[in-house]
Structures are given as C-alpha cells and as structure tokens.
Image (cartoon, rainbow, N blue to C red; front, side, top):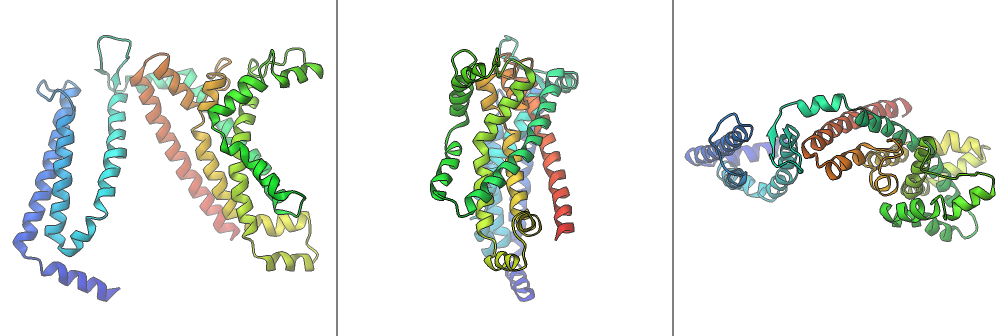
Length: 367
C-alpha cells in the first residue's frame, strides 16, 4: 500500500506545476460560474432581486460547463489518475443531475404557494407551508397510520418465516407450493387492489361478502368501518409482499450449514428447541435484511390505498403517500404537497438511520 501511494505521489509530482495550476483555475472558475448562476436565479425567483433569467435553463448550461470543467481539470491536475477518474465521473454527474438537483428543486417548490387552479402562478411564501403542515390533522393522522402499517411488518415477518420453514421441510408437492406462494409477488399492487378490494371484498356482490353474510355478518362492509378498513388494507398489502420476505428467508434457511443441523439432531435438539436456539439466531442477519427491505416498501405504501379507499373512511386507511397524492390531484396544491413530501423524506431518513444503528447494536450483542 505504501509503495502504491509513493508511486501515485511521484506520478502527480511529475505533472508540470503550470498545468496543475491551469486545472485548478478551470475548476474554480466553472464552480464559481455554476454557484453564482444558481444563486442569482434563486434570488430572482424568490423576488429578492428584480433582475434574473426567465427560466432555469442558464443553470442547466452552467452545470454542463461545470461538468466539462471538472473532467478537464482532473486530467490536468492528476494526469493518468485523472483519466481513470473519467470512467467514474459520468455516474457521479448523473447522480447529481437526477437526484440532487430534483431534491433542491423540490425544496424550492416547497417554499412557494403554488396551486395549479390559481391564475397567479407560484408565489414565494417561505415557511408558510411548513406551518400549515404542523397544524394539519390529516397529515398527522396519515403519519400515525404509518406507525400501524410499519408495526404490521412484524406479523408479516412471523408469517413469512413460518412459510419459509414449511417450504424448507420435506413436504409433498414442495416445488408446487413454492410457485403458488410466490404468485402474489408477481402481481402489481394495482391489480391486487382491483382483484381483491374491488371484486372479492365488494360489499354487495363480492364472494367474500356473500360468505360473510352466510356466516351471520349482516353488513359485511370491509372498507366502511375505520378499524375493519385498516385491517383489510394491511391484509391486502401483506398478501402481496409476504412472498418477498418468504423467499429471502427460505434462501437463508437453505444456506445454513447442514453439519450444524445434523449435530443439533444428534444432541436431541429438535422442533421448537432447534428453531429457537439454532435456526433463528443463525437467521438473524437474513431476517434483519428482510424486515428492513419490507419496511422500506411499507413506507411507500400508496397504490392499494388510492385504488380501494382513497384514504377513507375519514382518513382511517390514509398513508402519507396517498395524502400527498390527494394534495396534488384533488386540491392541485403543488407547493404544500411538495412540502409534505420533503418533510416525509426527512422523517424516513431519520427513522431508517436510527433503526439501522439500533439493529447494529443489537446484532453486536447477539454475536
């Protein structure tokens, strides 16, 4: 490693000083042009200054100039190492263009009063949208619903683990059942919402509703009562994504060393003891990965809710994503909807980061 560092330092030292200074000057100049163009246009759009461009195209041109200057400067400053860096820079620049810029533009929109049904267009209103969010009971209701939806992942995990254990055992037609249990994952959530929510659970003519009436439930409305509607929504979403967790857990079970299982059987550990003291601890890394991925999918839950209940009744099944959708589609409130999306993104980042740290500490104690 030390020899490689010395070789790279020698390579950089061999580059003429005036060439390196030229590269640094190009990088500084193009960066200054990009920052000044962006700040100038931002001040104009927030009506801080009157002068400015008609649209954001000059910022895009400044970004392209900065990208070219960055690539050119790396070759001038670092020589051969700079040329190798050119293979990585396109991905870096693409990430900035497709992730960073849209995020900054979203924050910019969130600071404006922009309703598509208004003829006045965008108006800068600072943190007014954030203050409105703090006092919006519908937003807090949807955020509370997300707590219930995320907590339901633990139940889904238990079911998925049970199915994985079943499919890992020597049962009749094991391959057939593997395919059958994976079928819900092959369907689109929109198709599931129409097939189950709008057809099977339809309270007038749905076969499930008819069967419920046969059992004595006079008004089997699965989406009219808040509690029943929320549980029905959780069950549809779980039916769609439990196979994803199941297949990950099944792969983990099949990857367990056979020697450990055989030694456990010799020692008399079978059934519940084998699962709790051997299989479950060894499966913790896979289990954590499956649960985290499922939580990420759960935090994006919207399509089933939008197609079946649109958040009703009275917001009982609402998620933050479906709430944002209604702000855009029904109220045409782009500014406020974007502010909700930005705040929800911050909440997700904080939640996932905290959860990962907590899981990491827990895994260290277990291992």
